[in-house]
Length: 212
Image 1 (cartoon, rainbow, N blue to C red):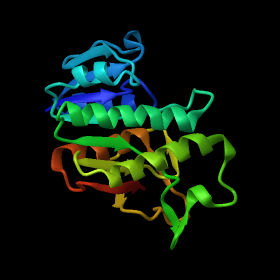
Image 2 (cartoon, one colour):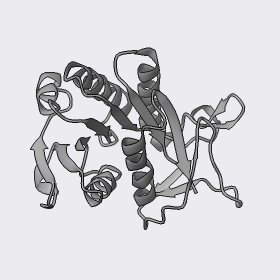
Image 3 (cartoon, helix red, strand yellow):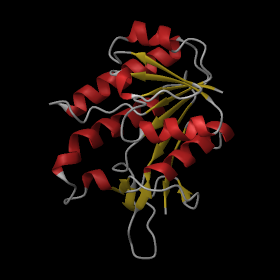
Image 4 (tube, one colour):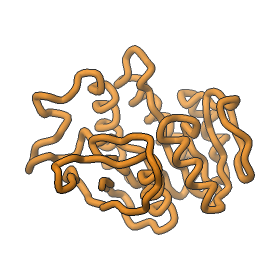
């Protein structure tokens, strides 16, 4: 497939890029700083401002799939920047008639108990609140529209740089934990789950999650 990855040089985006290339896909990396990407067979890097919807639409022309690993965690108003950027991404993929949009989501909108989201729990870390709110609003935007085919993958509560094992579980809206009550996934295994979805399309217009 010809895959465009938004935020391809970031924390999760770089893992997605590595996994996509390892499977033989052609990757168009859409990033703010192309110099951060190492040259690789099958990879082309393009400087794109996500907030420039017209330019982003042109960059997405002809791709089979968009993986959005967009993140605004370095901005002063993370939630507002995130949702503004995501609205631009959604508009651009729709205008460019991209068949599918896969989104790197957040874990905060997962339920730790029936009807209880991590985002609204009393001990949710304040440092991650802006990103979590933006990711939650993005999920609501996807659910509310009917033009773009999408999937939204929430990671475990803890996502960390680590090896690819290929051994994990998938769920839907409930937080997954292991036998010790921990919710964890490596970036490499998260990328495996996302590229599996890209190739198999098992969760159309649906949020799903991954954890050990």
